[in-house]
Image (cartoon, rainbow, N blue to C red):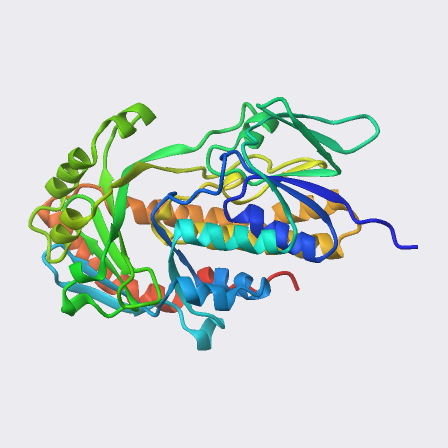
Length: 401
């Protein structure tokens, strides 16, 4: 008689949580998904890229066609300086090389796609469950406790609750915390009619480096009249508190961003002016944790490895995590063995990307005119090389063989 498969509680329903839940449910594991928000988040974040490596996982989840309905295929990256001079034009991966295309999509819509898929599979999703701590009974298993006084029991607990993970803080209260990287992030959405014809082709992602800060924009829907995303990275020695971020009005933020990007090439200022809402926040990373878990609890996604957005790999790393962990659970002698192997396998890759993201972010700090000239020359030479070598290791994901 076949033994029942283990049960898992997954804390967090961002990207790694629901994608892992889908893999586990389909393989016959018990799974409950616990989310701190009181309902599915429909207004979170801006937009993100799912790179070819992340899209491989989406194909494993049978969600490729759904992604094509909500996102824009991205085939090219165009880099300029602030006066509009093109520094490099490089492919954004390729189907022939990596097996998948990159897709740019609204973060909120992508989250909803994963949650809708989980609900269709009959996965139990419980909202308003803010993790507080856990107990480990002598007879085995783990009991997760939540701030509303409720609890949930399972064989194992997965912490997939993001940058400021409460599962991580409970498990390792003295471990390093996410570190402010010296950059503020702002962004938003505009309608397609704001984008001039010169830039209106929907495939490229546009990147602009200036004397201070950085600006990017791209289409993030599958029809001509859907939104374009934009984002601005603003150097700032001071990390803003939550109160400071939310006490500033959109117009105050808009003026701050316009001041940074004043005189930059069209359509940057018109995009900022036309954006009805300004999204804002600090940029953090977490270069390395001494451990990602124990025999009963494992951290995945941003809970284990916080990376800044400067490589566009955060979502894809979360997807890779879910697929890798599922694959290990399917072939390991025990769940604790799978947990240990997961950390051994994933740590070198994600920490390499964290460091690459940190280096990319440093290129967005304030520079003198001669510093800008040197940077532009370096990028003109380095970016085509990255397209050949850097993308190869970053975009290539083969899973567990």
